[in-house]
Length: 205
Image 1: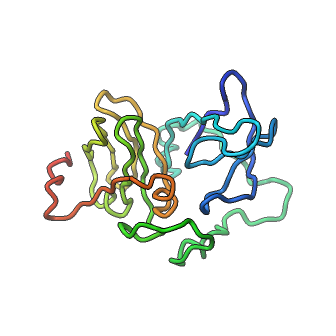
Image 2: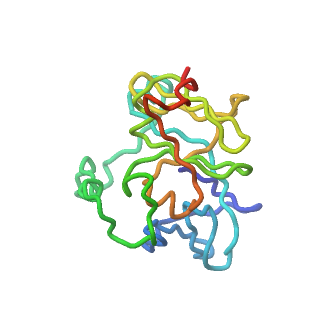
């Protein structure tokens, strides 16, 4: 997810606190050292407690997909002056193990705890989780509704989620998350399911 650094009329700088809440890493701002929950989208401790973060539209796609659309993009260098292999994912082992390292409370059984989901929440209608494994099996556009808000999820032939929009084509901010984290912060979330007998099959265009 991507959030604006502007809170009210001031711009803040953020860092990783190293602290967890419901197994989700908390951010902190350098100016007041308030702690911010990523999935609650607000400060939960410190002088700015209760202040909200504004979620921004973002994309998570393969480099080749991004480069095709934005050929002049600058890339962060891995020449940092430190001896470290940045091609190694330090969390690879964590992804492969089904159990959680830290408790989050009771985890709903709708999906495996570490299933990857696309999370979408709207002000009037609540939240919905779209299992990545399910929606990537189809390319095109998935038309769905969260509450009274129409949602269009566009999936490329390569199985990439290229955009999430409303019926008017306006981008809808979204989050890629593990199921256990999403449901911990959105306990009433709905889950999109799809199979051969699913009447929602007509929603694919």
